[in-house]
Length: 173
Image (tube, rainbow, N blue to C red):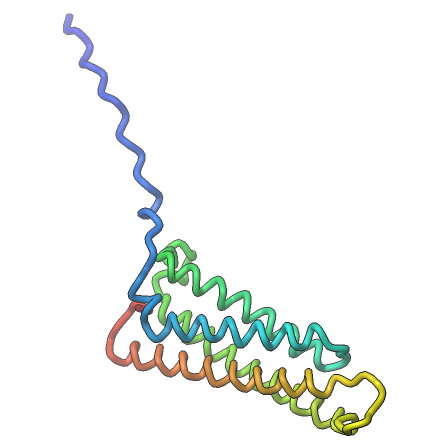
């Protein structure tokens, strides 16, 4: 009878999909800078709205700004940490996902900016020098400017992503 073969230790468990690494090319590249600017302008947009007295259609503008601020934050950190391949189904098409996100954000920020411009015009009566009652005119004006800035930033990043896609590149950075 032959002796049993020697026991081999179990194979080392590999990391799920690599270690977390900071993607410096993305951080220093145009899309990384645009994402940071989108986060700053988006935060200014929804904080300005949230600190004023608002009602009616301004709720939609606040919803759009908070939604896309959170989505942009998620996209930024997934790309920055190189973990976008962990997103089921969409991770392999990350550049296309980013472009679709940017186009949808631009469309909805356009609507939100239009709402804020309309609200600014509706509250223009209280822009008088000695108007004694509290008024949301300046908050609505500031949020309309921030919304226009967000719209431009999302359009710019969508254009950049489309240019990368047309050059045959599959990665964001």
